[in-house]
Length: 172
Image 1 (tube, rainbow, N blue to C red):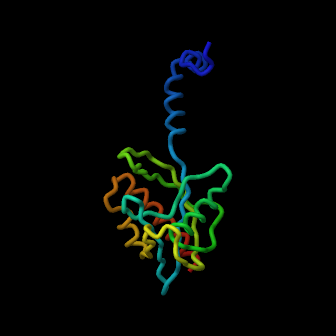
Image 2 (cartoon, rainbow, N blue to C red):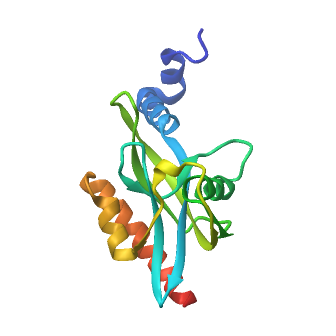
Image 3 (cartoon, one colour):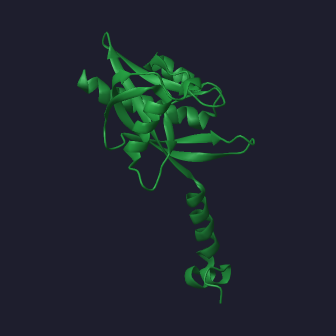
């Protein structure tokens, strides 16, 4: 008997075996990423740093999670490489959001992104200059993030901006 075969799964889980397998496959196929919500306070305004994707859309600095790195380290590394940002990062994500990652060959997949607050201390020239790191007021950042995206992902970005705003306002 093939231990990973469909018959064995159905034997273990009854009629729900195939449902279990499809859910498991879906969860394993999702990419997991970590992002930095890079911010600074300027004249009592919260400003957030966004970078451009290879498809020229605005996004948070982010990258794929790696087995040998903590998620906040991945977020911090990408903030430096994509935005030229050095700063203080929180070790726990304040939010998780869904993001649709468009691949080069016109295919894409949904990603689960943990996002970490990172307060800017210094900005230097980024390694990935084509990313065009730009500071936005929160309401302008939301508009830029939502441009050209599906309504589901527009709501995801709105959730992130609202949560970040609430947390950062307590610090001001």
